[in-house]
Length: 224
Figure (cartoon, helix red, strand yellow):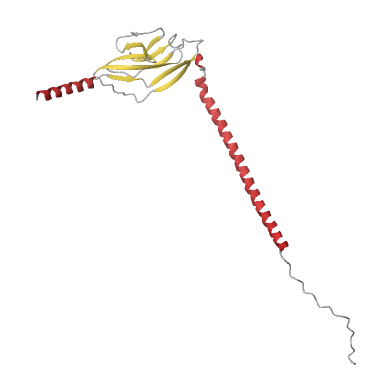
């Protein structure tokens, strides 16, 4: 009996410990947004949003790929614990909305930036991921700064040309099919009339009725 009670107590402690450290995912899914950075002006800000944390104690972490470049508490702390040049906190009514990335940090090639929130109070501990991840590309990655604004125009133009091409091909195919059908009908009619003429020409003719040849007859007078 003592061994059984010890096992029950250990299992209950393990389950309670696991429930305190659970990691619920409240975000439904992440979206990747591509932003282009001009190397001639690398100090233009790139905004990375953070999860909406309104109550409790939380810690916000800014990731560059898999590395933490900024760690911030949401209450009293105004600057990052681990920071690099070019990371600024964006607040609205004492609430952190995200980070502005500028300078050498944003000038790196092909980096994905995301924000993660760890809510420590009230328990249990929760981990929230930002719904929007930012992929920053530079000119070295063959990325045009106006690419984002022109993508829709290029797509619409290509779709329009594609539909024009499909319409033209459909009209030509319909016209050629109609001409082919008419030509076949005329050909079958001509072929039928030609076969009928050949049959009439090959049909044997009925023999003509010949009259019997009579010699020269001299009339006999009636009074004879």
